[in-house]
Amino acid sequence: MTTLELQLKANEIRRGIIDAVYSAKSGHPGGSLSAADVMTVLYFDEMNIDPENPGKDDRDRFVLSKGHVAPALYSTLANRGFFPVDELKTLRHLGTRLQGHPCMQDTPGLDMSSGSLGQGISAAVGMALSAKLSGYGWRTYTLLGDGEIEEGQVWEASMFAGFHKLDNLCVIVDNNNLQIDGPVDQVCSPYPIDKKFEAFNFHVINVADGNDIEQIKAAFEEARNTKGQPSAIILKTVKGKNVSFMENQAGWHGKAPNDEQYAVAMDDLKKVEDALCRK
Image 1 (spheres, rainbow, N blue to C red):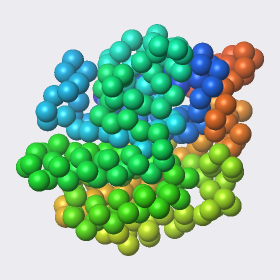
Image 2 (cartoon, rainbow, N blue to C red):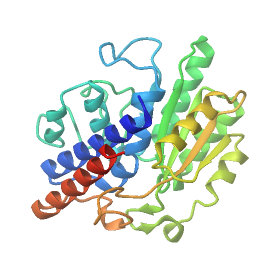
Image 3 (spheres, one colour):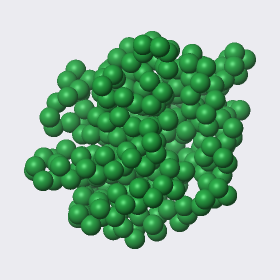
Image 4 (tube, one colour):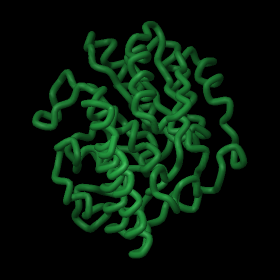
């Protein structure tokens, strides 16, 4: 896909996020919106996957370590063809396949269930090690939040990955600088994030604009070409990206828009689409 096509797809994924959280009357829109661009690049450009054969042996694996931003993953999977987009409106409803946190037994296209922060990266490291031991060529990707990396388990997993030189592992940090209680550097600062991963023998790629498609694509290319070390991509993103009243607001970490706010959000995203179509 071209950069413009990926930008338009990311906007569609953001629409799906807002629809899902609004329909559920609960959920986590802020971090889902900040991660929409990297999710778009992963599923529409980077990873070897097939919606017609989601369990194929040689597929790349993805683990959403910050499991509360399931709306971003669900909207991406739906837009990629794993299940109907209309199903996003069943998020968190009784009997849905789209639970509040990803459940691999229920949702097509999931490689791992996730929820408790810090556990997803550990599962991803195990997948990468398994591929190495078995001689498989597929890669493993995992997305973490910058608040999540305050968890000690993240660094135990990173130490293991660096020691075993898992160059088939790509850790992505969505660094929007906000967690549920406020700015991460005021709650319990994880900075400097890049130096911490470097200390565990990671090849670190800092992305100045983690919502820019071209910068994200370049980072993944660099990670693929890195040998002998796992890679960590640190994306500087905007929480609530492209929804005017949600951008850079910690209060939109975990609540749903009301009717009026929903209309404003969808209008914001329509304006983004219109601007892209004029390019």
